Amino acid sequence: MEKILIIDDSEDIRKQLKWGLIKDYSIFLAGSRREALPLFRKNRPKVVTLDLGLPPHEDGTEEGFRCLQEILEAQPATKIILITGNDQRESALRAIEMGAYDFYQKPIELKELSVIIQRAFYLFNIEEENRNLHSEVQRKPSEFSKMIGQCPGMLEVFETARKVASSDVAVFIQGESGTGKELVARAIHSMSLRKEGPFIPINCGAIPENLLESELFGYEKGAFTGANTRVQGRFEYANKGTLFLDEIGEFPLNLQVKLLRFLQEKTIQRVGGREDIAVDTRIIAATNVDILKAIEENRFREDLYYRIGVITIKLPLLKERGSDIILLANFFLKRFSQEFNKKIKGFSSSALNLIQSYEWPGNVRELENKIQRAVIMADSSIIGPDTLGFGMDNELLQIPEIELMTLKEAKDKTEKDIIASAIERYHGNVLKAAEILGVSRPTLYELMKKHNINNVPEE
Image: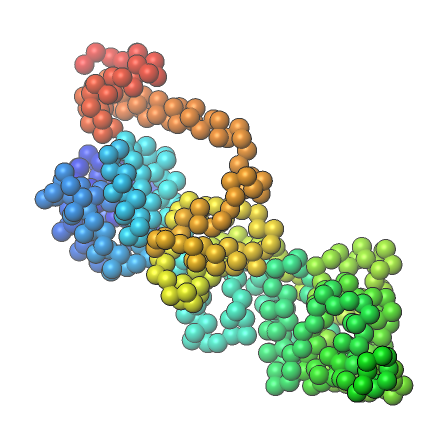
């Protein structure tokens, strides 16, 4: 069972949280910093709830900040949730700058707080997996060390790549732009018997059709105007190694014939030449287009597809990779923080929520660019949602207008339910209900009037 440490000077709040969380967590209670730190060091809870107003300075925040700092020094990954009053918002924001995970304003509503706590445990475990993954890479270097992933789709990619690396068969990698097709191709090459040979990539869609043939196959002197000398093409440069044909779906039909001939006979002819040249080159091809549709539309040869697609590897979209998104975000954050010499501790909870809910049409490349921008633009040690550079009018954020209009209604309903529950628990004793809710009795009467809570037994 996961461990949580509750630090609060109020015995009532400690009891309330223990009562509400005991079914799901192993609970440790402390009423002061002096009680909390030994409990933390002994039990190492992943999540801590902390009231900044601790004895001997219950009316201030000095002791709470000291406790926060000492916990984070002992275990920086700990998710600390501040339990604050309405007048402590500024202090709570300062604590988040120091490395606290989130804050929750009194009065406490257990269902709401439970969601924050669950999220904190989830993120701690994801980050722990990330740390373990990096440690494993450092202990045992892998050809996939530049690729972070633990979702089933990526594990299948890694497994297939390892199996085909030792053979010389052609490999076909399918995936949208930004999913990491070239990284997979490089990994296959580095695990193959050709790893001492060259890895030559070429983006077939980025080179004009009239230049692509000579770029790939080379040309003889006098083959065309300006051909003043013999030039080797990428096939020959990749001899004894691997030629990576990216965006092969853009390959012109006339060159598809020449590529098919190479795959069948392992020979090429330079432009303007008649001599067959034997080349020992492995082909790995990739595309982001629907290749079967291209075959139906006669834009791609079916016989070539079966030649290059002996083994097919399909890369998942980033939005399909679940917790990998957070792993990747933290990986890029660490890398760019070191590169730009900035002391960034992590993401705020709202930033992490946005990272996970965003659709990522540009896949891993877009995530990498967003994190790089955030690190460059960050003015604090915590990356917030604004720093990530998402425009609020971006339809991909998927925040329907109707949700924004109903937030107040949802807040009012939650507030009414909390007050009614407290009144019922204390059998109509408004004074006790006010104490547990963290408000004065007059304030509670005003709230009861606001929500039309009238049927209350006499005190």
